[in-house]
Length: 82
Image (cartoon, rainbow, N blue to C red):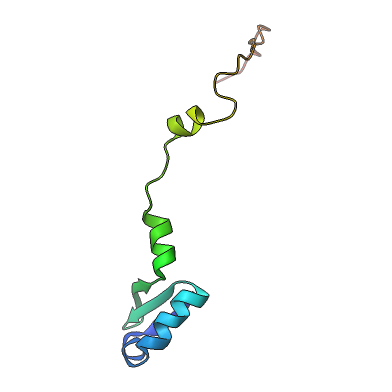
């Protein structure tokens, strides 16, 4: 991620926005500390889009409803000293 000092970011805003779109997120620093990040609209939409939960993911799976015959191994567990 490229880092810009605030005064440079203000002076070169068009370049900053272009870099955010073509190169990825751009960090802005104030007095040497990371303060903000400028990113493309596409990156922002991807990060803020609602995500599908695990339950919905499993329901939408092509394997949903498949009858699997799963048996647990009934062999005794090993002894562990605690």
